[in-house]
Length: 162
Image 1 (cartoon, helix red, strand yellow):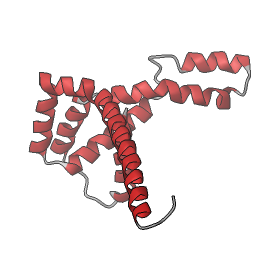
Image 2 (cartoon, rainbow, N blue to C red):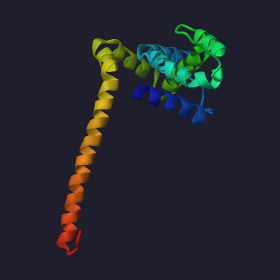
Image 3 (cartoon, helix red, strand yellow):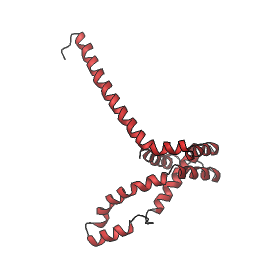
Image 4 (spheres, helix red, strand yellow):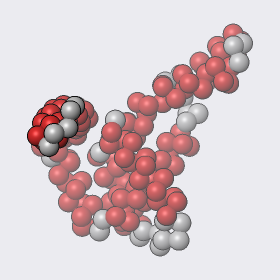
């Protein structure tokens, strides 16, 4: 999930900052699209869609059962209603990658993620990111507690009552 957030943020940054940047070559875009497919970025986006659709349901359907039924039908899995957004996201992410890396680098990155170690890394990356964040929070909290105690002791050593 965190990879997707970074990817979407990067794509937005590209839109904001890269409007005047030169478009990547067709060869670079092709290599970048292949990498986007290998990284399964579209799958990550698709995984977020049910949450998005659930949030939109009450806004669009306005608590009207007849609209809710039709809403559910047009947003059912496999629906083409969000294909334009998915295609746009893939194109923008591919453009971001194509502008960030050379064609050779894109191919090397794609080759790594196509190998068993790269696939395993992709499978575990979200869990690893969450566990790493938790470790960071735990270590930071412990360090803050210890630092607080040392500061209190140092200030008491200077005669302050804390």
